[in-house]
Length: 204
Image (cartoon, rainbow, N blue to C red; front, side, top):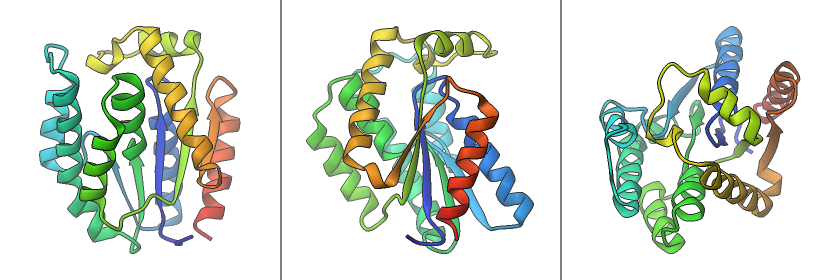
């Protein structure tokens, strides 16, 4: 594995992925190790503009438009990723597997279409490791209630989130060596330590 890997943090809403990616970035800051951190949708200036459009509570896009907007946001991030690929550690809050979990398993979009567009955009760029954060129904909704504002993807019903999380777990089974499942229902400090310790091994 590259010592300058692409490490992705995946999971449904309320699963703690953004918390943990921030903890890893704090660790890298402390160690003065160069890295970039982006989120999807978002990251680059144009991708952040698309993010606001996708997540706006008043948006009513059909599932195909949703997919294409996510892919457009990813397209705007590719240059950012290319510039740092194998030169710096790249941390990503949601990436390719989120598109498959949400748009295919959650919304029923044809997986072949998703894969074709991803291959076209990413070319030779490959994710090295993924932390998948999973959460139960109780904690999911408790955490969403604490948020100051909810976006469009924070307001689906539990059946949708269940489909997406099952989708993530199916993806993880196909990539066992490059996936670590984090049970975010457990003690958060223990999970922080678990992730940091695994991350240290990834960049040795």
